[in-house]
Structure formats: structure tokens, C-alpha cells
Image 1 (tube, one colour):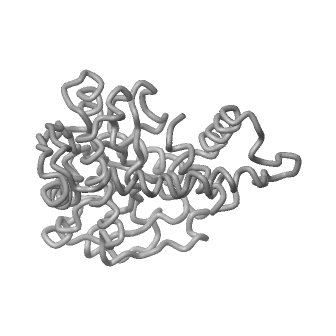
Image 2 (cartoon, rainbow, N blue to C red):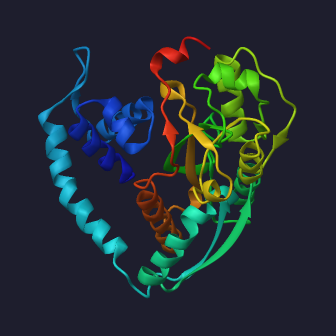
Amino acid sequence: MKLDIFYTLGAVLRGGTLAAAAAERSLTPSAVSMQMKHLEAYLGQPLFDRSGLQVRPMRLAHEVSATMGEALQQLESLRKKPTAAIEGTVRLGVIESMQPMVLPATMRLLRERFSGVELRLARGRSGSLTASVKAGDLDAALVAQPENGGSARLRWQPMFRRELVLVVPPTATESSIATLFKKYEWIRYDRDSVTGSLSARFVAEHVREKHGQLEFDSASAIIAMVSAGLGVSILQIADPGLLHTYPVRIVRLGRSAPVLQLSLVTRKADDDRRPLMAVRDAVLSALSTAKHHRSVTDIQAIPRSTLTEW
């Protein structure tokens, strides 16, 4: 029985629905439902009344949550307590676009809390880093999780969700996305990447007229090209410092905006490795701090009605 199930149970009780718990835990509603069924099978008793349109927690669900809640808090405090006993080497891969956001805070937290943990870093693209984890050449990697969920042989820990935005030249005055794509070339992000496939799908579904042959696997190169007035692009802005060097306009894509899921991928066999758990907590803490800061400035929201006009 994995402890994550009890955290999910608490989320269900707090949110009132499986969907709310799924959002809090960065899971799918079906994954939340499956965890609750596993817990019911373990206990041999139902935790929810499923006779209505929505599941309703029974008294036993609250009793289980209350019983485990205090124990989980104490266990978490013991696990995070700084100690020289947690030591070892962790080989961590981070996609290049996320390194400025993740690495400084992660390194600082490890030195403050887990000085016995040595971090060896690698950079690369999501696909190659994930393959290195699977092959055992890396212990963990912060990558863009594939849309199909990723390999079931690996552990995917959701860490951060990033909305893709439209980047346009700083001198562009057009407010319609359709007009922007007519006037400027579409500079693609590498279509073999997760970001590239998400942006390509969005353009295919919402933009009727587009043109352009340029394609890059570097966000900084694309932003530099857009800043020079050579096109528009859809991508994620991980390093806001780029916008000071290469000024652009950032246009949000509304409710239909593609969202990139960044996850820490590890091997399931390494779930109980304490140095790896320390690194995971440091990365999560670094990202939790970062997501409370605006990543881009000069954001222009697109009215909902605009989405139907493309």
C-alpha cells in the first residue's frame, strides 16, 4: 500500500469530488478513482457512497483520513529533517530551458538541508534524458512529460505545468491571432519535441492561414528571431531574462492554450532511495517558489470570443 493513496484520500475529502482531488494531486480523475478502489479493496469496506450522480464519502473515509493524517505529518517531518545520514550521489538531468529556474534554488536547498547529497548534472532534450533514466545512466530527469503519459516502467512525478503563449514582434500592433499569422511567418518549435507537438496541434486546430519554413529546437533562438520581426511562435517562456535581451510581445491563448506538463522521471525501483527523495523535494520546492512569480511581462489576454473567429 503506497502512502500516496492516503494523500489522495485527503485531497478527495478536502475538494469534495474526484475531479477536485485530481487537480490538487496533478492526477487524472480515473487515477484518483483507481487509488480509492485500491484502498477500499485493502480495507475490505467501501469508503464512498456511489449510488448518486457523484460519489459521497462515508464515515469510514473520514476516519481513515484522520487516523493517517497525523501519522503522515509526523513521517513527513522525520523524512525532511536535515541529517548527515542522507548522503550519496544523484545524477540529475534537466532540460536546458528549465535550468535557470530550477538549478540555483535546488542547489541552495540541498546545501542547506542535505549537505551529504552530491548532485551531478546533465542537460539535454526530454526524449534523450528520459532514455538515459530508463537505461540507468541518470537517476532522475526534469523533462516535458509525453502527452500519452510516458513509459509505465518509469515513475512520473508531476512538478510544474506551463502554459504555452504566442510570442510576436515588439512592434506588432495587431490584436487578432489570425491576423498575426497572416502577416508573419510561423517559426516552429521543433515538432519532435513535446512543446513543438503541442503548439503544432494548437495552430492546426485554430489557425486557418499560416506560412513559414523556419524550425528551431532553441527557445532563445526563436525569441531572438521574433524580436527581430521575422515571425511569430508558440512556446513556453521558462527564462524571463530572455525578454530583456530580446523584447517581444506575449499574447496568451485563452482557455484553449496548450499546457506543458513538466515532471521528474525516475525508475520505480528507486522509489525508496533517500538521496533521490531529497533531490526531488528540493526540485519541487524550487519550482513551487518559481511558479508564484510571473514568468513573463506585457501579457495581453485574448477575449474568449476571439477563439471562435480564427
